[in-house]
Length: 373
Image 1: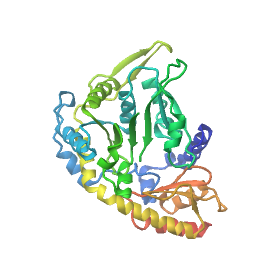
Image 2: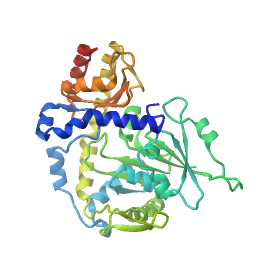
Image 3: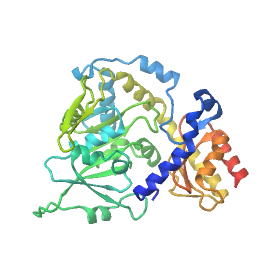
Image 4: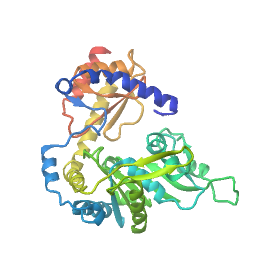
């Protein structure tokens, strides 16, 4: 796995900071002039002029009073797309993930079963323990890709009379029993597999879908499920500070300090319209991103470069362990040629295609590799 331990995660972040620390000493204009394509992630996309036009057309109102009509239309559209009864707009994928987890739980004790490398387990600041007070059963998939049914069954904690155990109340799968899906890039998975959102969603009680990754919206995620579930989720969103004018304050008596949640919005329709624009205009482009990623993979194979994961959608995890240079040196050379990629470890770098990457990006990467390897 790419992130098999906290030590490896820390090491990867250290590599990342080292590679891009010099950006702080460079003017924004100079950096933009030098870098032609940013392929570190599909979260780096910028709003387009046409997206701004759509944003300016938003039918905004007070979300707390249920009058933010662009948000209401987006929630209804996504619920219908997934074959569920209702949806709830959130500020981020982490917010929709954590609310979705807590809304699926009731009376403790309880535990959550997930992949050891799942976003909710590694990248959400311990949110499960903090918000839901749940323990986590984190399982490393034997196939290094995804959890299988036998692995779920063997790690599932039954609800026996044994008071020593915290029964499994929720199974969390990422991208692809109550069941909740962190579908951050479900758009890409749906396009590649040829299944509709409704086909995928029918097997789960709830799912969260992000608008700011593959689709390219600036902000936003949505939590989808049945009406009763979303009703509870709206209470929790209020508790988390979403859709409220005043910050929510709670006192943690154990550490004797105040913890303030300060996420606020009223007229979120401008964000909802950006998401709607991306569904209408960027979703049809995802298949081309996948095609370009696979074409790059073919060229990399010709150079003797392997892959940490199969190239199935818009991401290429290039493994340079068979070359004379490590991933960070290679990333630096490609950066000098005008393309940013992200080193994941000493040997692996991630290259991500999105709608603001030109067709010549792959040529720049391949020509640079031929020169330095």
